[in-house]
Length: 401
Image (cartoon, rainbow, N blue to C red; front, side, top):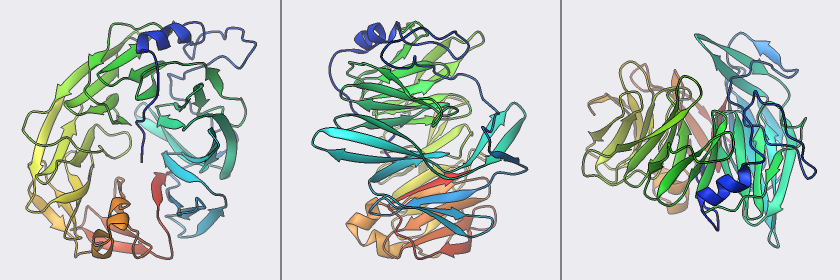
């Protein structure tokens, strides 16, 4: 799922100048605007369900999009399915999916609300369950770049940036910023925007000016929001952006410590500190964002996907190119593995590229596009396969709830 994307023209400093009159923190009063609503970049966790029912536990589901773009929401508790018709390219993470349509240089991004989400709130959390379906459409020129932040999503068109506030989507029109920048992607985080260019991650403050807290980052390609902060993956390591007491953001580089290729993506369990990615043919990279350390986990077979659990044992789940799904310890030792489950997809280059690995506190979910199946594996219990969801066409899969 592309969460880090390319853009065009100017510099991050130019972006800051253009943003200066428009950006505000979530606790500031809005400025007047004759063209569009003033951007508000949320910085605090909201616990208002907006009409959705608060439920005792996360309403977990898989959101699955097929080749055409039609969406199925597969309830993991009730084991039933809800369909949301439509077409387009689908990506997403967490509560929302984004379905993109392009034609003749123009584009529109349809925002699909799964109606299921959980908000961390100090030492506890709040879970909500509401109606699922399209809630907003954002339009612009060129190929849109969608980057999901902590409480908002940035949709970068060639003619500007749209900021989608997760709490007000469908009720308030997304704010528009006529943004000219060389950023590969722009991430809403902690009331700021993080602009990742080809060589740096620049932090723009509430006035739209660089704060001086940026960091070098060669060829940024991905972003994940962890419990510790925003992690931007780079060819030479990662940049971790954290919020300090008083609201200031600090960016620090975490370079790779051993000689292995950079991963093509980093993945982990939601609201946890660890991320993992495939380290070429040598195993998996494990990033502990709390300790600011990389660990190379060698494996006896090349990997096609990896995701960190971020638990007390520092475990990582991987998909190996023999079709097995394995659970690795913090030192790379193999704790468990399944029988080959995705061999058919691995034999087909197109299907291989679409294998998806997702993890939550109890299970790993691995898509097998060639067979139209998603496998559920209990990573706590010797990698036992607990369920297989069939009759699907999984071009895109995300965990919601």
